Image (cartoon, rainbow, N blue to C red; front, side, top):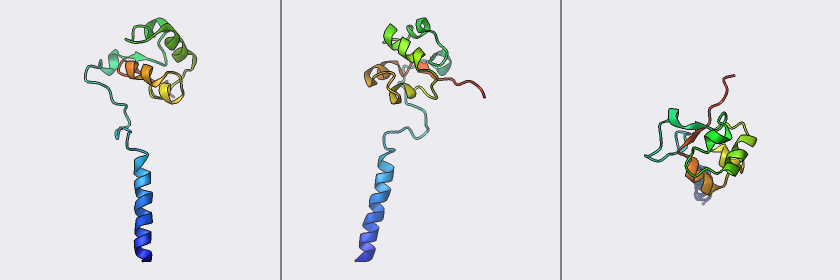
Length: 104
């Protein structure tokens, strides 16, 4: 009886641990659509000006200003995680932006 209870408890812990990662990309890179431009053609959210960010489809001047104001970013996903843009805005721009960091 104890063995069965211990087995069920261990299974619950294992499943809970994997559930938190179920929606993450296993390679650590946010997924992009097939129509996304190559990485070298994307706009760098850590260095682009507001006018350069406005070239991104779906970008508005107010969202571009927020992106510039809350720099720096480790990844483009920081835009969503730090509340810089909404999930709807992120879904529109994620394929067109990239976050390059300064070499340290």
